Image (cartoon, rainbow, N blue to C red; front, side, top):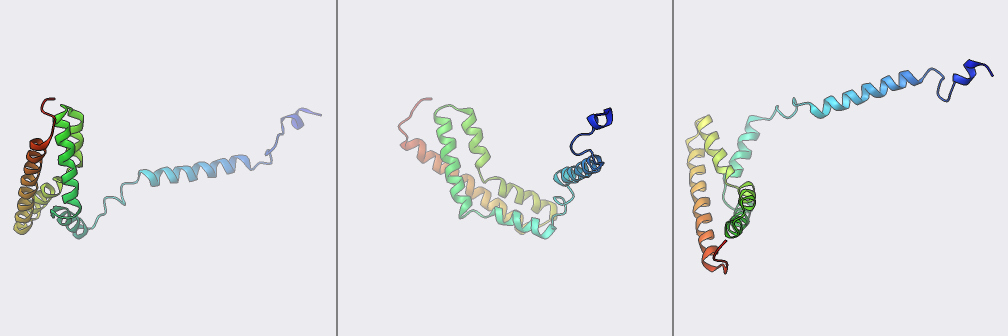
Amino acid sequence: MNQEEKNKGAGDDGTFFPKLKEMLIDFWHYVRELIDLEKDTKADAHETIAQIDKSVVFKGTNLWILIFSVLVCAVGLNINSTAVVIGAMLISPLLGPIMGIGLGVGINSFSLIKKSLLNFGEMVSFAVIASAIYFFITPLSEA
């Protein structure tokens, strides 16, 4: 057996490097598609406004999320846990009206600003009342 026959292994029919090149090109296209921001930034303005307008409303899902957020925050305050209070702030739906106020100012929509301010006031009032009730009935008195 000569040296050429020893060096010749499986797959040495000259197709290894073209297949490797094709696989690397496919992988490169896959990675570029993953990190492409072009599709995410082409949001329709009307769709964005409708989504923010929907998140301003204080009923249904937003109400229940606020209830549980207030409970989580109250427990966090009761046990003196900063992490729990920050977690409650993260799940709170108060960002919807805040974004509505910002969008209303940005597009000069007085009706959206008014709606957002009213709903923000309702949410804050509800949260303060709910937390006052919680602290009134809770058996824990000191952190």
